[in-house]
Length: 345
Image 1 (tube, rainbow, N blue to C red):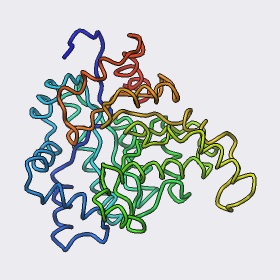
Image 2: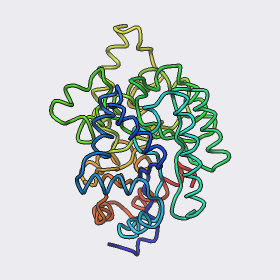
Image 3: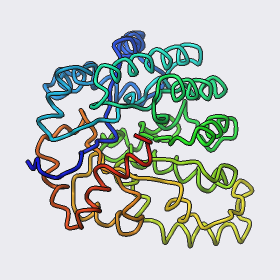
């Protein structure tokens, strides 16, 4: 592992959990589970399965101290941008979720104060109460020094393109901070085909669900209403960079024919929003060909490094990205300066 790069490796999608939220998950599972099938599958696996992997992930999620720092040192990571693991507080009722988000943000801020050169973070919010979520984002940014919001995709099957959530988008734009849309398992309304073959989680269901969320935001006209809004997607864009041409062709044809009343005419092509309002990270995708593709089609200033710790903790992973066939300044932007600019580090 190289130690002579001359810049920092900043990992931008790194998960944590609080003991309070983990216990709330356990309580929900012990009450015969949530009505959310994906929650029972995902969280039930990490909290109930006795395998070495699940134990290690669950333990590492709750550690923002020496074990995490040692793992960062072992894998060459100088700084992590921490965010509350999926499904965050979005599985709970609104009142509980609002309180849990606030306490999680306070705990995260305390960890950052203890290790200010190693950690920064994104604020948890509860979209179940959009006004309270916007207020908590403002508090977390202005009082706690957090760098944006983490939204673990759908909230009880609803997405941020629904105008009832737009107080959150307005707050993020006004604060000039990004919203990181992290995956969740698909909602009950369409999870069954994924569950039948064990494809509901990170193997595939995550990308489908979160790519849908992002594209719903684009075609809803949200970025015409909030033109300076910044959104971050992990996993090299959840597949969307590969669909740009077809999205533009088919979406344009659909709008021109007035096929859907719910599909307004946009000020720009769909692909332009994906290039100009979105940023992307490599979380879970340490593979040179798609990394280079996203850098080429979305721009060198749009892609940032992420490991997806602790879910994909592979200490030698940075050897792959260290060896990207790009100039030094582009590698520095990928690891450090893009993240510093987007998250105002």
